[in-house]
Amino acid sequence: MTDTMMVAAHGGTDAMGAAQWDFSTNSNAAGPCPYTLEALQVADATRYPDPTYQRLREQLAEFHDVDVLRIVIGASASELIARLAAWTALRHPRGTSWMPQFHYGDYAVASTKVGLKRTDRVDEADLIWLCAPSSPLGQALTLPEDWDLRKPGATAVLDCAYAPLQLSFKPIAPELDRDAVWQLWTPNKALGLCGIRGAYAIAPQHADRSPIAEFAQLGPSWPTGAHGVALLESWCSPMTQRWMNEARHTLRGWKLQQMARLQMLGWEGIPSETNFGVMRLPWPLLLFDHPDMPGGRGEPAQPRCDARGGWDGMQADASALRVLSPYWHSLTQALRARGVKLRDCCSFGLPGHVRLCVHTPEAQQALVHAWTEVTQELKA
Image (cartoon, rainbow, N blue to C red; front, side):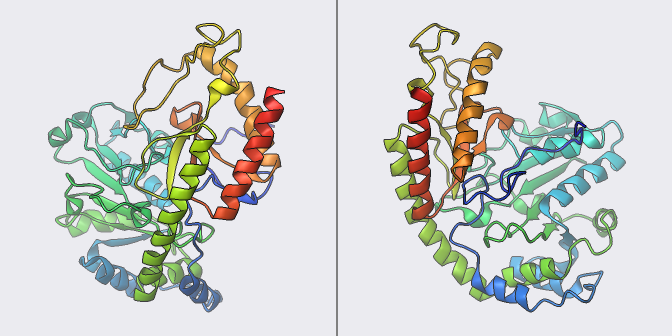
């Protein structure tokens, strides 16, 4: 039987289980946070949380220095994304949504499920998706050229999932007034605890109470349980934030090591500000003497993503992808069999590239060893 559910591609655990050396998620490899783990261990799972989450919302409001009425609790960022899309569709029948060229797949899936048509023009959009740092590239936000022409009633959303994992010190969304948009926060990746679900939205500063309440009421009862509450409460703790600062320092060192190791193997990195990024694999060494590749033997006519996330060189035409596909599948499966998992970027529109998180030195060594073995086999 074919599974026809509409789902976005994701990294992490798959049908083979959890990879020993999993680079495919953006989780904090310096985690898990010990203070959050302690909070999870004492969480009382025998009782329902307060359905209004009043105490939790007050803690989050104080943490962000916003009015508590602006805080809406969600099951996860993906649940809040789906809820925002559904809320927009209710308010704008036959509405439209805009999203960046490269984006988290759930934006498109959630919009499509509720009938929102995708538009390339911000001035036509009823729902606008933004992300800072961006996914999958981990770069600073660049607003679309027609940002100032957006509809007065449009809902703009800033996904802040990766903000706590920014390793650079540059402004990540310098042109954006964050208080003028909906913000989505989901700290489980930053805390190294992807398996615990819990997130929250911060409504725009000048939003009326009525639409905020309407959006909140679209969610299920108790959208997050006792462990999600414990994670979010821990997120507000000064001890947890001190640990986050230490973790970012550790990740900066690991990132330098990892980039150096992979560049020695011929991998080309696209600049990122985060604990993850996109890299182009050295396909000319493996593939570009293939007689079916466009341009003939030896011509590196492969799609390439430049430092700004755009295309440099040829577009990925069907014939190139047809040749690339079996090699790509063989490569990723061979790495997976050796306990290494990378995030295929084909679903982002970046064939020949992978996204990978910054990992521990031990995991980096395992990746280098597995890559060396696999590429030698493919070239044999």
